[in-house]
Structure formats: structure tokens, C-alpha cells
Image (cartoon, rainbow, N blue to C red; front, side, top):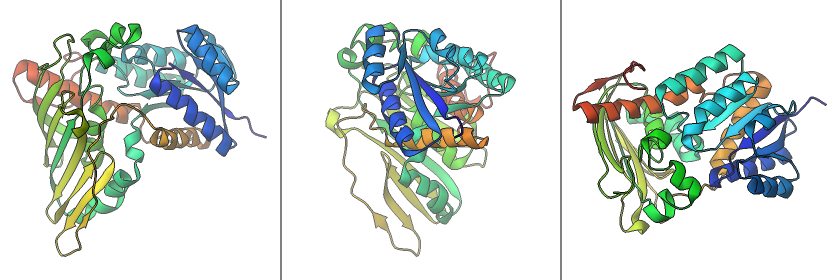
Length: 355
């Protein structure tokens, strides 16, 4: 039997626990994957999860990387650790799949890409919403029927509480809400999935103008509200509106509307809510507002991990590699620069200007 691809999960917060859960499910469904270990700086957490799943556990990434059974590292640690941990893992010859954002800086992201190429390993970024069935259908089937795309609008209206999210415990207080450790606010943490989808649906962005501000969360540094206007390489325009200040909290939502010369389509959260094309039947689905926008149920992570691990087993390119995963981070940094300079910013950025 061919050796299974050994996987270790680094970071056992809520997202890391989702990684463990779905990887164990994948292990039972395919013959080429095996969950080997978990890592968390809180040893009791690592031990508890390790014993629960009958796998090895470590309290340092260094010990895990010395395990020759481990071929792939999934990284679900605080954002400021993504780049250094990924680079370290790749220097050990491990393949890496990292949560968004891949780094807090463009310099960090580019170094990750460089190290993956140098060490001949795969680097993937977790943008699991690309695997939502309705979003895939919009990308692969519907968007061509809309005609020439001239406008994409997106809104993310969520809520994050200072006490229950940013200052929830010692670990949260050590990194959330600070530029140096989180790298940004609503755009970098919550809204980056939406920005990734806007690029994935319509291609690269060439210029942007935006404003960011912290308007309702006085005890954190980063932005809680952001707006931007973008121009795509193909000439289409786009708008971005994001906040984590939405009240009442049971009215939270995310919308993406794609407008073409023949019609439009609207995604609400990850569901296709409306498709309307001239001369064809209009399709509408009722979509409810949400009260919960933090919990990760895992289905989309599972689909993404399966794709990454299969790409590794077949030695083919994973579609959300480092270069692709960096595009949304670069656009966000451009919006930050535009807000600070009060100018239109052109892309691609020089990383020596915006790091």
C-alpha cells in the first residue's frame, strides 16, 4: 500500500478543531490521508484533542516538524504566526495549507511563496467559500449567461463584540484587534473571504479608492468599518462595504451581486438568492438573516482539504496557491493605503511601500 499523506494541525482554537474534525472524516473516506498529530501551545489542549482522536500531540511546532510521518501542516494559529510558522514548516520540507489571511504583511506572504518554490513544496491558502456549491455554480455556469459583467457589489454586515470576541480570553487579548498581530480588522479577518470571491469571480483589480475607520469599537486599534470602490482589469467596477458593528445582531448578512449586460445574480451568505436574465425565467430563493457568523461547520473546509490533499497526491497544482491566495491580501492593503493617503491606489503594489 502506498504511504498515506500524514497531516498535522497547528493551533487548536475553534477553527483548528474544525480542521481536526474534518481531516479525521477525510481519513475515513479516502485511502491516501492520515491525521498524525495536533499542536497547541497550551499543552493540556493538545493532549486532550490528541487523546480524543488517538493521535500524537505536541506543545511546540518544532517537535511536530521533526516527525518524519508528517507531510502536511495545516495552520490555524493567530494571524501574526502564519508566515513564520509556514516558513519554518517549509524549511523542514513540509507542505503547508494556511488559514486566511496567509500573513499580516505582503512581505511575509511573498516570502512564503518564495520558500515554497525554493523547497519544492505546496503552499495553499484556505478560502473555503470557493467550494460552496452555489458559489461554484455562479462561477462555472451562471456568470457567462449574465453577459458582460460591468459591476460587482458586496456587503458584509456582521457583529463582533469586544468582550465576547476581541477580549474573550488571554489568547484573544494577545492578538485580536491590533495592527501588529491581526494585520487589520473587518477586511483582513472577516471580510477577506468576500474580497477573495470578488477577485475569483471577475479577475484581477488594477485600482482602488477606499476609506476605513474604527467607529464603534473604541478599545481596539483596527478598523471595524470599511468601504471601497475598485476597478477590475477588464474594466468592470466593484463596490465593497464591510462592518462588524451590525445591530440588531440577528440581522447579519453577506451579499454579493454580479451585474451583467443581460441580467444579475445575487449570493446571500453562500446561497444563490436570485438569478434574473433577460428572456429567461427568474429564479429566487428565500434566504434568512443570520444571528451566528463565527462558527465554522466544516463542510467547506472538508471540500478544500480534500482538493489540496488530492492535488498533493497527484502532484498537480492546487488552485488556491500562495500567489492566488495573496491577491485578496494585496487588495486589502491597497485599500488601507488609499484610506491613509486619500488617493486612488494602483495595483500591483510595491511591497516596499506597503509591507
